[in-house]
Length: 393
Image (cartoon, rainbow, N blue to C red; front, top):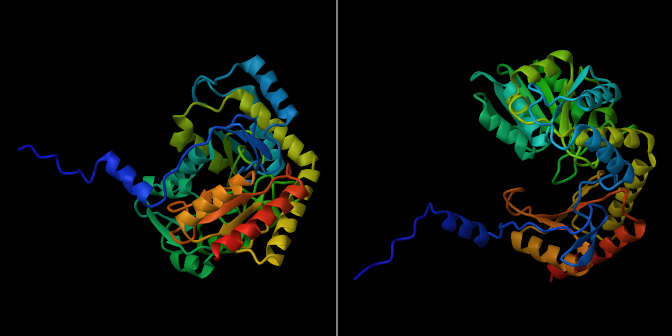
């Protein structure tokens, strides 16, 4: 008699089954439209509350024109890494524009924020006796960067400054934090973090992917929001794929910081440079972001409208003054069913589940944009109130 082989606990199929059973299986959705406040998916229109296109620039005609003009001049691909032959004039111009706008000595481009963060952490925490200290809710790219280094990784509870201070003063330390935390919309206490780092001789790096373009009088991000300069925040990373509506990323800071990244940042040295046309589009986005302050003004007004409405309706929304709003549901199943309920009403809101957030803190992540209208925000609030009643039955 033949027997079926025993199931392999390490098989790929078994691993996928475990993900499904935990309610953590992810599926991609195919958009049939440009990114924006309204999107088309599978033949239906939705109001999009899941995009990081905070200023509504991703489909702006001027960015499209800048991209097309640069593609006509420089082609599509950059062809090589920056240190070989992939560094064009438009890349250099974007770096110069960034440095001037941010009041920093230099800037360095990367093809993505993930690559930029890997370079930062692995370049400034190399030795076994070094340590990387970071907020427990930091973006995965910062955590992965620390796991790639020889340095020790130590994490403090979310926003726990006392916990951070207990970890400082124990050798050469890189402190890394999100400027705006992507899953709850809270803002790091950068003045306190900068003061602690200065007191203990630690180097501070800020991932401002969700603050750049949104916070600060000119949209320069979290450091500008708190009036901090590059002496207080020496390493600043941000992306072009969110408020700027393009793609790619940069690190900006003092001369030695940028030159160290050029010489030792493996994801810069060994990655093909971002396409020149994207650099041109990002340059245009920077100009529009600086000149069109109405985008930030409108966005902040919508954030306040949503927050006030959520409070009046007693919705389970995390406190946030940024476009990221977390509607707490507490389980993967509730997050999925809540997302489906809103989808049926024509609202696209993504379910966020473990391991992206801790188990039992699952939520619907709402992202507001300057492209939204007051009526769309009010409609979202109305359906969230209905959803809240359904979840408490």
